[in-house]
Length: 356
Ligand code: CP3
Image (cartoon, rainbow, N blue to C red; front, top):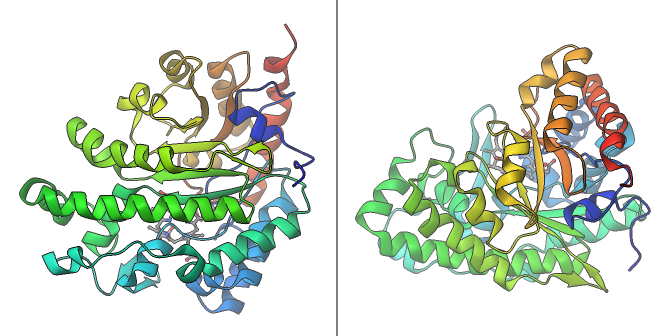
């Protein structure tokens, strides 16, 4: 398969030379775009967008039609995997995801099985293949999954949570049960990401949104250990090209050194850490992705430019930085401000990529 014409993202993730810093945004296809809301209204609801490859392709391409982004990300959700395990996913407007059958009883956990992605997540793989065709090698396509622990949070809580009491109680009272869920998840997610790679994902990202709520020993045992299990099982090249893997852990900058040694190519970091400091800590082991506070996109264009410049300067000269937000874009973001950010990153970053 041919390399995308703009392969800046893939090069930056592998810490290879680029002319500028590539940029894409977590949740770049979403409710801040009026055209997304129009497609979602036609589809009826969010899950239909995910489950219908035509809709998924349409919304994946929407942000690329507007902004000069350096990557597309598969339009889907991390919760499609527990849905495929039979937990019954639906989205309640304004409240987020809900599972009809959260994991509460021991027998429910013992019965859990890793789904065959070719059968139970066929619609995602079809979307990956269709998006690749529609992209026509313009920019690379990023595939993704949630981390085993982050998925376990939703599977055990039954939805979003502020305190994660169910999952943390299981951690302390029945660690054997939690570890069983994490092991099934890790096996499921390895097969799922490998299938996305086989169908055309050119880089993949693991979203560990909730790893940061754990104590340090619990983070290592329950989050990072299972991410490592996935990393060890991933196909790292396809059709002669490396497939870089990004690990994003929200609130995870305590453990950057351990993450950098886990076997991924790049680490996503949130806005709470100074990027230059993060670079010192990971050295030449991995690339870094991040880390503008999504709230900065509400500010005036001059402020957005200044913040982009500050982050680029903090990373400094050299390769191995992918510009992104520190978490998903807010649904209330003015779309014009995204253009300001993309242009600022492309223009201001060139000075850091000059040949020595
Ligand atoms: O980044 C992208 O553009 C790709 C698509 C993508 C979505 N969700 C679409 C989405 C990705 C990569 C995700 C990942 C995801 N989903 C995560 C990890 C990243 C993160 O944000 O921490 C998590 C925790 C989820 C679970 C999830 N999905 C929640 C908690 C919610 C509700 C919160 C909200 O923003 O409404 C969703 C819904 C969701 N996933 C939307 C989108 C565009 C909004 C759905 C809508 O149209 O109503």
